[in-house]
Length: 177
Image (cartoon, rainbow, N blue to C red; front, side):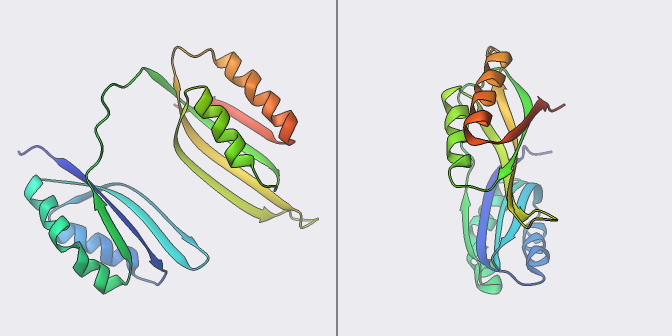
């Protein structure tokens, strides 16, 4: 069996029923597989990112014909070969959840702290919703982190506790096994 390669496909455009079906059919018809994906709708706009696997010639066919899919779906589609990491440091997977009354700057300040500590955000999802009784706008963030094994996790927690006090947020951080 031939070695598998990867390709990343991104798409953004007006949401409509059947987009996932058309995109997944396109990938399948090329003899490829969807390994990983993230999809969401924001204010009527569909957004997607796919990690596709297949043999080199199959992925090349996707690269040469994705404009047909763009025309068919009316999505802005891009493709890219994944970057290769040169050296991966030993790390531990953590899950971080943050919630607070919504206010600007939470994502920026939190991501700045994590960056300064050398912690990579592997995935992050945020949502704002109305509290059940008061209707107050509540912000919720959930992230999967890659924390360097050499990093003192108690120091990380102390820094996040300081952030929580400064920004009036609640947070939970736990190993994600």
